[in-house]
Amino acid sequence: MSETMERTDPRAWLKNVRSGQPIILDDEQGRRIATVERTTATQIIVNGHRFRREDGFRKGDVWARAMLREATPEKIAALKAEQKRIGLAKQMEHRNWRKLPLEVLEAVAALLEKMQLSTED
Image (tube, rainbow, N blue to C red; front, side, top):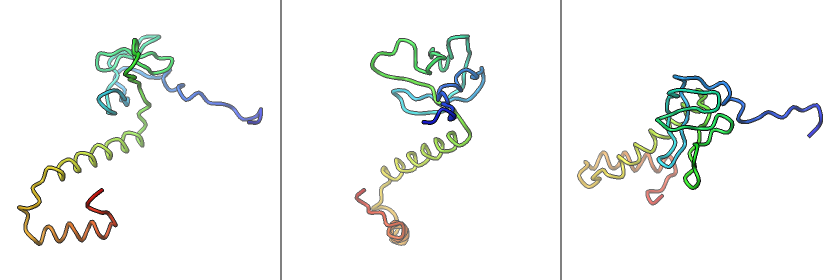
């Protein structure tokens, strides 16, 4: 890296986090959008848990790492799309395909074939 190139701290955004702001909470329950409840000079409180402002990790964590991630509009949209995709996949998984009319099954099969997906994935 040349001397003229400036290194940016990937955690610099944590310094500007304020109460009421959306944030991405990544913990043992998965990744989700949460709201900052309160902040102090050294901590960010989300869902009753305290996170260090310096690195975004939950205070006291040893094994199960929980951390905060920046919630940009792009990241929020991507997370919502992923959550929707997973939810739809779960709905499809629990559907009784044998009770659907033949026309519906043929349409679904054609769509899957068109997208080059196999039913075994």
